[in-house]
Amino acid sequence: MIQQITNNRSEKALTKKDFARITFASCLNFFHTNSMFSPWPFGLYYAVSYEWAKRVNSNSYQFQHCWGSTAGGTSASGISSSCNNIQTISYADVEAKDPDLICNNDGEERVCIECCYRKVGGNNSNISVKSKLGFFILEPITKKGIDNTTNNLFIYRVIITPKPGLFPGKN
Image (cartoon, rainbow, N blue to C red; front, side):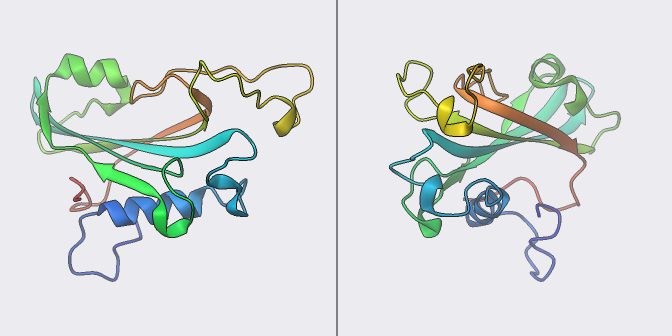
């Protein structure tokens, strides 16, 4: 979806509205009703993080974090999304996020896309998602995401080389 959503537009850069639509469409396999929105009957919401890195030189990268989430809305039109400002970070900072984001040549770009379900209320929440998801013996383990959130369940991460012009994202 990320690579194709702007095909029919002259402006190819992804916008926060694009990230919201991608987030909504990508969680429909599990959340096919309004259960993805408040009051979250499963005790979960869906979030997607996009970490863009573009190599400027061997120790300097442009970096941007964009995201979309069903945490803030009550309908498809209210999905939360945004793009942070572009930062300049070092090779070591990129490698700490994910070694696969390291680019080989100046001007090369990579995007880490991380999709996950997050517990409503964070790790300190007393909401158990175990039985609501069909886990009757084991409690799903929360893990730290690439965006440093800690209440993530079922993280899926993929790193791609985006089509030219898609990033940096725009608010």
